[in-house]
Amino acid sequence: RKEVEQDPGPFNVPEGATVAFNCTYSNSASQSFFWYRQDCRKEPKLLMSVYSSGNEDGRFTAQLNRASQYISLLIRDSKLSDSATYLCAVNRRLTGGGNKLTFGTGTQLKVEL
Amino acid sequence: EAGVTQFPSHSVIEKGQTVTLRCDPISGHDNLYWYRRVMGKEIKFLLHFVKESKQDESGMPNNRFLAERTGGTYSTLKVQPAELEDSGVYFCASTPTVADRGNEQYFGPGTRLTVT
Image (cartoon, rainbow over all chains, first blue to last red; front, side, top):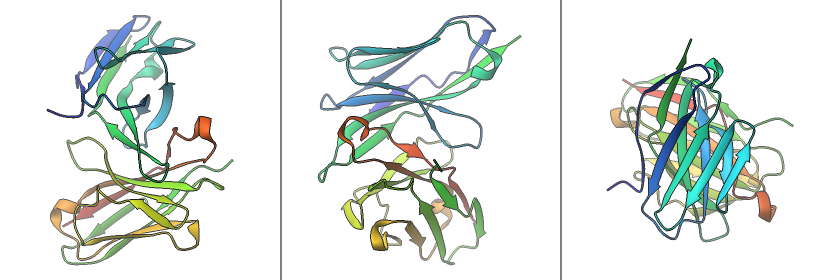
């Protein structure tokens, strides 16, 4: 079983729709969680950090359920520009104070007219 | 503030050759990470530096890979000799040492390595 799992999609939604992605993780010692957005042939860009139960930023809401070990990302009123791959990343503390991110394979979102 | 930069953006080499990738982290970021994404797979951790010291290199595939960060500024990742399976995108990321933001990793644009 992979340490971080995501539905690869693609999710094809009309503009203005609400879409939700889930991500499950297997390591209960994971401490913090992130959603990254990755456009084709670009680097992952940090979208949201989730340190406690959830976080909201405009049209984006991320939630964490530690008991069930999953994180979700909700996008409301989706725009054409939201089309991208959304990567879930789970953080674990390393010796020396750094952090190791374990990524899922990503969920592809296509927002259509 | 300038972001993480990586050089080159693309590299095409033949099997058996050597390639050196460079990463310049965000200025003042002590933590530097290397990751790799091979075709069809997820991004995977390679190693972590704190300043010039390797803290964790558990993700390095084998001893053909050598990472350095002399002086604690930029880092290099050398692959010698390169094999076909080394093809992929190599990302570098950095984080500050401030506790409340130390978990957020900022990625460079990556180096796309193709070994033929």
